Image (spheres, rainbow, N blue to C red):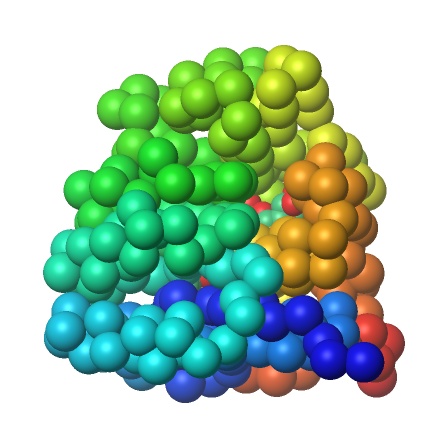
Length: 262
Ligand SMILES: Nc1ncnc2c1ncn2[C@@H]1O[C@H](COP(=O)(O)OP(=O)(O)O)[C@@H](O)[C@H]1O
Ligand SMILES: Cc1ncc(COP(=O)(O)OP(=O)(O)O)c(N)n1
């Protein structure tokens, strides 16, 4: 059977735990054929981001043309955008209806503190999103107020939904507590999604993994509700599988292939 095609439009993480590399691993884990449009190269590892090179906007445009003019993309995700010019190229395609489903992970800052994106570039894509998945920091930057508590997250999700059909998940991976709590805005209103917190320092690329899993599920024809819930379960399994791994001196990557503990 021909697999569904999922596309990631994102930055490269040389160490393989986040960005394009994580997304493609997730797509394979979910039985999707993965295509990629690279917006930026990052020299990063588990300790931090050491260098960033933004791919020129025109080259992002020709990559998009190469993929979209030839492959039947069923769902796409946007991660690190690299530049406003890259965002403009993606927006032009979205305006023309190129994406049946578009998942936007508004990457602004890495967990190690390096700026990876600009707010304006993300904002121009939000009107085309099926699902948006900011963490609390990113939601705060997009809205201009501090999103701190779970109730703040629910309010922020509602505020960020630009129409009744846009789902917004504010992720709370960095909130303390026994559960990892996200707030989701759906056309039926706001709800909380909970999973048992996995006690691990290996959490490099959780946001990329979550949004890529949603994208893969949508490419496979799942409803948005199911896609988000199944993606959250997958992230928990991927965190649990890698909790004893020793890859890198900092927070290591996830077990995208569900190989399990070493
Ligand atoms: N330790 C953890 N245990 C279980 N789920 C987690 C953990 N850390 C993050 N998650 C989940 O991973 C997903 C991505 O969240 P988050 O880590 O906040 O993203 P980001 O990497 O963008 O900051 C969310 O569903 C969140 O609840
Ligand atoms: C190239 C690239 N894109 C995105 C990120 C951010 O990844 P994320 O999953 O949000 O979280 P951390 O890896 O920063 O914990 C990245 N680091 N690199």
